[in-house]
Image: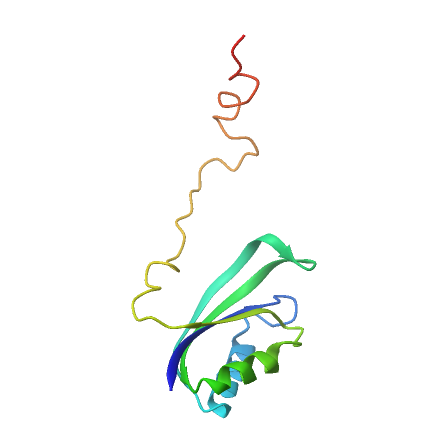
Length: 130
């Protein structure tokens, strides 16, 4: 058995709350495939850099699972056409590799105005040599 990390991006319109009930069904599916879930993390709702279809945001769930190699393809086939799952990615898990990757983002709550203070200063109009 190998150790894998599976990242699910769920459609927030098709699950209630943070998708905890759907997450339970995913964990049950891992067990049916002969796997054992060692870690489950919910990373929050995030806005995509590029939309997935017409979706602009998704709920990120991360699982670390020990399961047979053949089960990875079965898992991907199971959720390939599921409309609740926008994306599914399965990676080989390396211990300690993702500790810094998914830290909560520091949010800067400066002025919520539309324009930034340095916009005019760094604007292309002001930077031309005349």
